[in-house]
Length: 81
Image (tube, rainbow, N blue to C red; front, side, top):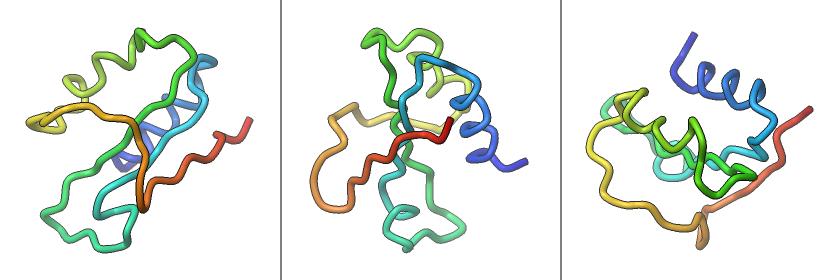
């Protein structure tokens, strides 16, 4: 199971999750073997619950900052039930 598959499975199992937003080079179709994966988790509880710690759990590396997922290339889709 890939890292993204694992993340999607965790998100589907959590009723607080409203969606996932894939951004960056993967969303633009320009990812290489050296690309990181930029994913925002949209949750009901703004404190994030377990998802507030996900960046550490998944060991995605250095986090430069958090920002709203807006602008060119940002897409928000509801997670299927």
